[in-house]
Length: 417
Picture (cartoon, one colour):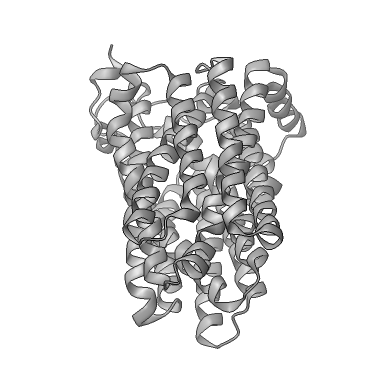
C-alpha cells in the first residue's frame, strides 16, 4: 500500500510541520520536567494523600471542562494563532510557579492552581495540534506524522522525568519550572510566524499542497457546529461505546500516576530522584512499545492487543505495593509504560479515524472530554481511597478494575472504528 511506503521521517520535509514538530518536542520535554517536579514538590509540601493525588486532577480537569469549546475553537479559528496564545498561557503559568517557589510562597493550593492554569493552556492546544497534523502534511503522510508525534511524546516521557529526577535535589524545583517556560519559546516563535499567514495547509517544498482552509470557516464560534460535533460523536453507537470504555479504563489507570509519589515517599522511603527514575522508566516502556507496536499489530488483532495491555497494566497495579526491593519497581514501571502506550495509541487511533476531517477536532474533543473527566475524577477517587484504606489496597483495587476492563474488551471484540 502507498501509505505503508511512507518513511517515518518523510513528513519532516514539510517546512511548517518540521518547525512545529521540533518546537513541540522541546515543549514536551519541558512539560514532563514540570510534571515530575510539580508532583514531587506537592508531595514535599503536604502529608495529605488526597492533595498529592489531586495533581492529575488539576492537570486533566481543564480538558474535561474546556475540551468541547477547544475543539470548536480549533475548527473555527486559525490554528497557528490559537496555539500561539495557548503557548503564552502555559509559559506564564510555568514562570509563575518558578517565582512562587523561589519567593517561598509555594503551597499545595498554589501548585495545584498553577497546574490547573497549565492544563487550561494544554486543553485548548491539544485539539488544534492533533487536527493540524493532517493539514500540514500530504494525505499519505498522515500516519507517519502521527507516529512522529507519538515518538516525540514518548522520548520526552523518557528523558524529561530522568532529567527532573537528576536535577531536582541539587537545584530544586524552581529551575525546572523555568526550563519548562523556556522550552515553550520555540513554539511561541514558530506559531507567531505561522499566525502571520492565512494559510493552514501544507507548506511542503515538494509535493502538492493541500488547499488552504476556508477563512470564513475559521472566523468565529458557531453554536450549530458545536452541537453538530457533540451529536455526531454521541449518536454513533460504536463511538459511544468507545467513549464509555475509554472512560472506565482511564479512571482506573490514573491510579498509577496519582499515587506513585506516595509510593516512592511512604513505601520505598526514597527521594525525588527515585520518583524521576520511576517516571523515566515508564517513559522507556512507552518508547519500547512504540518500537514494537507495528510488529505486534501485524501479529495480533487490535482487540487482543488492547486486552493484553490492560491485563499487564492491571497486574502491575496489583503487584506494585509488594515490590519494595528497589530494582523491581523500575521493572514494573517499564511494563506499565509499555502497556500504557499500547492502550493510548489503540484507543486514540480509533477516535481519530472515526470521523472526517471537517468534524475531527470537535469529535476528538468529545473523546478528550471523556478521557480527561475520567482521569480527573479517578485521581481524586484513588486519593480518597488511599486515605481511607491505604496504598496496599487502593492500587490493587485499580488493578482489578483494569482486569475487568481487559475481560470485557476481549469479550466484546473491540475493533478499530
